[in-house]
Amino acid sequence: MNNIESLSKQPYKGTADIYPLDMQVREYLFGTWKKVAKKFGYEEYDAPLIEEAKLYKVKSGEELANNQLYSFTDKGGREIALRPELTPSLARMVAQKKNELTYPLRWFNIGRFYRYEKPQRGRTREFFQLNIDILGVDSINAEIELLQFILTVMEELNAPKETYEIRLSSRALLDYLFDKILKVNEEIKGDLSRAIDNYLKMEKSTFLDYIKDIGLDKKQADDLIDFLQWDIEKVKEIEEKNKGIKDLIELFEQIKKLGLSNIKFCPYIVRGLQYYTGMVFEMYDIGSQENPRSLFGGGRYDTLLEIFNEEQLPAFGLGWGDVPTIDYLSTYNLIPEQNVDIDVFLVLMDASASADVFSLAKRFRENGIKTRMQLTPSKLSKQLKYVAKLNIPWVAILGEEEIKNNTVTLKNMSKQEQYELTVEEAIERIK
Image (tube, rainbow, N blue to C red; front, side):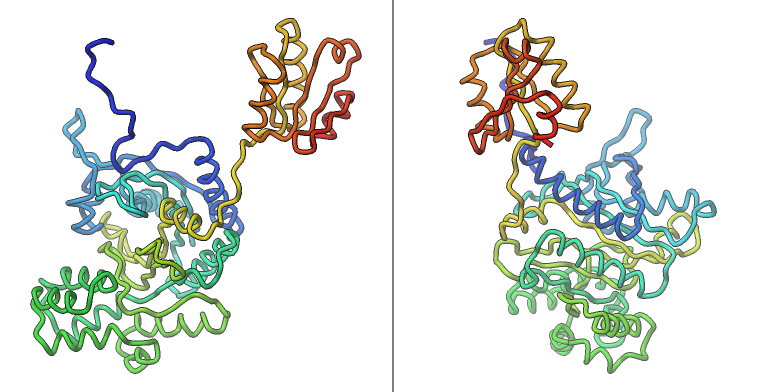
């Protein structure tokens, strides 16, 4: 042994090693997201993994900017951050070419993100996320389309309807609560928003103590508790107070007309990011206790381009993380069985046959057959054990007799049957 300090075999805290079968689970989810996004006519894009830190500090909110940002100073003296989310980068990209783009924009991305937070179930420091946004639509049709997108993805994942629920509210309603019902000062609105955002996670007595510490008196606390029990019918009593509230009511009317299920009005949905301006939503696992926090969320952010001194551009989108979603799929046994994605294994028992086996592998691959070839000659029994362990369905054997007869022996591993065939016949049988 040398004197090098012992290195840990574990990945950095909050990250994970993704082995091949785990990768298949991830690709199953990513493939579903991408297929449905393209079905809805959305275009894929990407942005840098690093940005100037101030891009996130301007609008993302205190918790993310001050506590969760992975930031550093580069060699040029610039403060740089690993991206914790994609919406600010999207806003930057749109602002950069605002007059060249054709609206409305329907864009999506599946990318890697970093947040420095306490790792726990459903929450890691490194994660992948689907971001899907529609920009340039100021009506609730944008919300309707992305709600339909969510429900279509859940159908594709075979998710039982009784296991999930989309909970939706509006920042306009929150503003009405603060300004007209509670009449609180601007200074405590941020703390109060965070308290409401954590409403479901607290006992009622703990929540009451929390909001009193923030500065609410008994009447304000009682009014807040009452507000948190409102249903959409109660909201209709203040329909004329502002456009955002009217839009919220109209959205639920359209949801009912379209027969969209698994969507519920919940006045305690706030979302932590400061740039949201209208509708906000989160999706929850309601069929188990395994996934206690929201699976994902999103909302309307019409004013984000203003940080680049550009005019407002209506925008609505969501960020859908891989980790909580895979936890949810595992909870309900919704992940398809994962096997090595190989159609056929080519045996090599004698080095003298290498050229012939390489040629056969080439023929198979040219015909769209996923082929793995033995590269080091070994006993047939050892190679068959290897194939069985990986659950590869076919084995092709090219021995001395097969080479002489210009044939191949094809073995079906599940039926334990084998056939001597021409190469063309073998290709057809495997396909």
